[in-house]
Length: 144
Image (cartoon, rainbow, N blue to C red; front, side, top):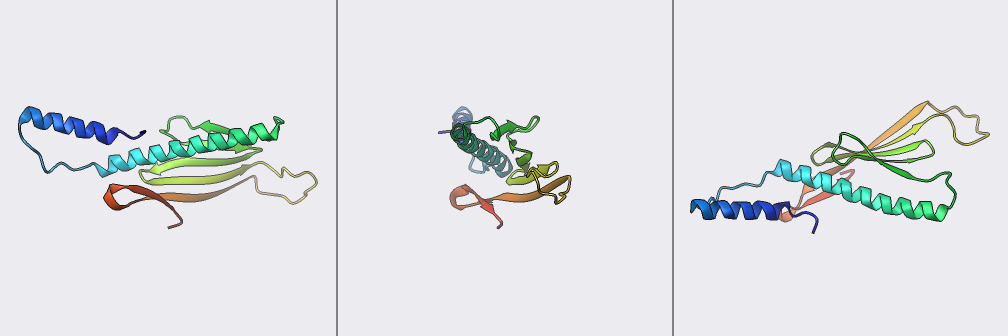
């Protein structure tokens, strides 16, 4: 079980009740912190899935040219980037419960013989948003 933070909170709360002899029925779950933890966990799960898929792709491809590379982004909790042939796919937490997915192309045409000029850099953004489900569960939506 990866997410045991709630169990730690439960044990700590129970220990405090035993020490003080008072039952606190007004304890609330910090929804902002829970959402932050869920967002980081979801990004880590996404990265693990992409690492597995990229590894399989790179092994089947054989040659070193055109491999998919995955990089963690420094000074962030769990942001990462997929890179292949000048194309970048960036997964970034913009706020607790909001993950930005941006597709970025850097450079000129990568197709030889195609004389159509492309912009120097193009970027598109999509967003995954967290929603609260029954029993405090978080689920992720796209274009909702």
